[in-house]
Image (cartoon, rainbow, N blue to C red; front, side, top):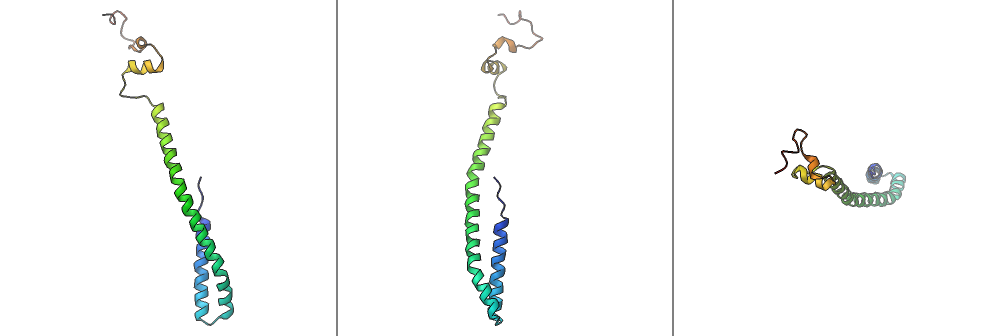
Length: 114
């Protein structure tokens, strides 16, 4: 499941912007602006930290699922593909067919008797 990181980027941008505004308004003697930006800074900082923790947890939790999904796909691919190292007779026996049916069409049955 893909979860976008857009809210984290948006809230962290707002937090940094609010901090810069608060810092500028304190230094520039803008009391009302400093009060407003100072009051909004703590909730924004808490939301930013919370979203960061959630994003990191999602990132860490999605890795084992991806590994398990990749391993499952590999196992299914191995089971579905024929094994090239097996002889044709062995492949036929594992498929439930008799070994004599794997003889090439050009050979006659008299050449098989020994």
